[in-house]
Image (cartoon, rainbow, N blue to C red; front, side):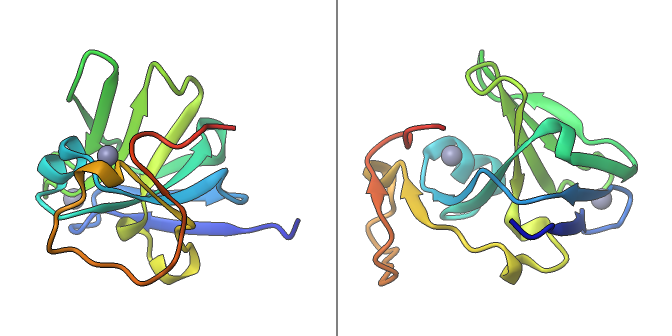
Length: 136
Ligand SMILES: [Zn+2]
Ligand SMILES: [Zn+2]
């Protein structure tokens, strides 16, 4: 596998991060929690080991969006950056939209397809999982 490196951050630049290596996978989430947190119809995530992600400037503030999940965002500008949860120990989802080059990490599947907004249509042909995809 070729060594990848990605950088990204929030809209105001207070938080910057670097990611070493490839994601476990990348996907578009249609769940209602991501939709509300990002105020967006769907959210593209790339999942990494937490050890792959280094914060170069600032640290996300965390919001407990459920009993299991924590959503990290910039306290200065509000950009949603990451997601961690007790059901994915040691892993972190990074919002692909926060990367400097989001075009470099393409999702390969849809999940929570059962919650997809009916006016959002995709012709990508990626696999669609009604709820969570199988991990690992
Ligand atoms: Zn910010
Ligand atoms: Zn979601």
